[in-house]
Length: 168
Image (cartoon, rainbow, N blue to C red; front, side, top):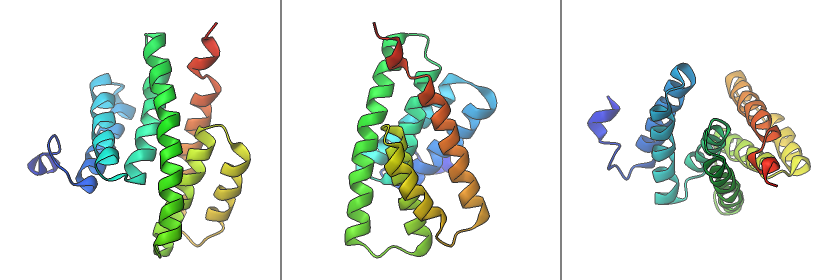
């Protein structure tokens, strides 16, 4: 179904986010690096086209996934550093959204947890935890909280084995 929307050339961030999500799941099930790379490409285009926080946080996460599975240490470091840079941009995008827009309660939840994940990803556990607790205190569907916690736990696991610690 998504291929009919030509995600390879699409400028629609929703299409690109869905394309990235499908390939993210394929990676999780198959560990096929082509799926991981396609997911990165989809989220990357969605992020850079419109400074989209959803695509951006998923791009950063998948760059950490790719870094964790890279055979080449230089590639792992490059992806890890790029993920941190993207997260700093995502934080700014989320802050601006919260200042300038009046998001729905669900949208506000996702913006908050995206910002929390970005703070965790750049190593600011205190701010990440503060924002996460604030978001989790908001009304939200159970699956939203479960999805949030699962992604953050996976991220923390990857960050614990940062490729930067192997630089001599």
